[in-house]
Image (cartoon, rainbow, N blue to C red; front, side, top):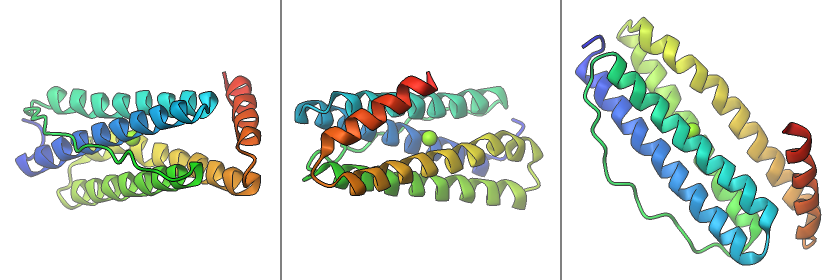
Length: 164
Ligand code: MG
């Protein structure tokens, strides 16, 4: 194995965290759908797919360096949100949590002088800047719109169309 067992365990922990984030986004997407907010539902479904990709990317790396993948139980997502803002706040908090975890992994890779894992994690460090930034922007938009949630929907739809 090209990485330490400690690093391998930590990466397995991150796989679980990314799948947990994915599962939470999927749950939020379903809540938006129930609320009739199809665009936000679509956006959060995209986030779900992205988080799953992150998990699979780490899984692939663990295999590539000769480690064993150990999948753990993913916690039940919180399904009890009172407002759109509460959902977006929870999503932002989750992105901060993932960012801290990636930072912790990078610290460990640096401490171990594990250059391969540092190089691998760099993409995730950059990705988290983007994730936190876009979720912060969405929260700002939701707060600005207040009760007019449909305005959020039309803004997000416009953004999704121009990004595609
Ligand atoms: Mg992620």
